[in-house]
Image (cartoon, rainbow, N blue to C red; front, side, top):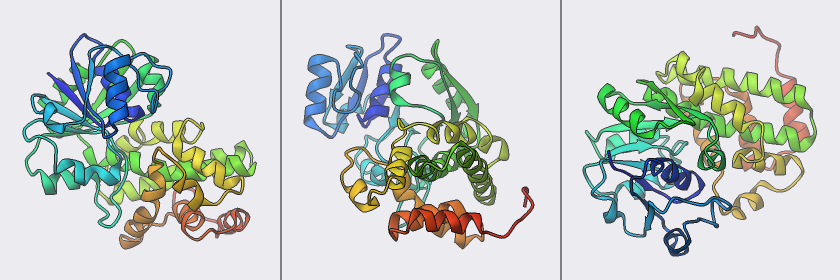
Amino acid sequence: MKLGVVGAGAWGTALAQLAAAGGAEVPIWAREAEVVAAINATHANPLFLPGIALSPMVRATGDLADLGGCDALLLVTPAQHLRSVLLAVPPGPALILCAKGIEAGTGMLMSDIVAQLCPGRPLAVLSGPTFAHEVAAGLPTAVTLACADPALGQALAQRLAGPAFRPYLSADVIGAEIGGAVKNVLAIACGVVEGRGLGLNARAALISRGFAEMTRFGLARGAERETLAGLSGLGDLVLTCSSTSSRNFALGKAIGEGRPAAALMADRRTVAEGAFTAPVLQQAARAIGVDMPVVDAVCALLAEGADVGAVTATLLARPLRAEGA
């Protein structure tokens, strides 16, 4: 199975490196001409994945048509750009969604956008606790590979699996997507806790209560509880809520330290998807009657410039309730 990668940021480059590990040529599309030149000339992507020597079998291109001979495409562009990219990808190859988010303006999951623009196209979702630099360096990693077609899922798992990369199959595409989207928002909240110096007790509580919010929302949208408690939900949540290697956690930490959210988001070359997902998730949750107070708090900090101390006090002052309620 020939794989191509759409998007040469850190995660896309790491996936191309993974796919090329067996000696197969892997074409990767990059928007930036300097990234194409660097990958092809020096076998490196210093702009997005510095310090990693890439396989010479990773070949970059600025023309999406060059990926037309692939059997499957790993779509690793930011969630808010998926729609425009789908309009340009070659017809035919199966699509593997690797971006995590909900589309602003429509509230659509990435699989919803594929169904709308590419009806009937074979589809899978790759999600889980994955820092790009660790995957590219060959460190042990496990992910969820969700696919409604068991044969396609098996073929993709066999193609991507390696000595240090272990895909676990699932049929729950919605659950895998929701876990990846919601954890980005919760990671911002945990970053705020870190930046504000609120302590490890507070972070652990926030991860636990955030997971409860993720579960309520996911179940209401048709996800399976087991998926949300697995690698693409709880696993990814724990990872991204614990390290500044997470763009979302780093954004929240800077907010907690007192820096303005608007200036931080304008200044970032890489995308903290949680900042875009938060208001869309808040609206979607309210529409179906799901209570997500941590998400509401993140939205207040991002859009309204609310004081961190006041937002924290509001969360702590909520009425007492049973933990499972």
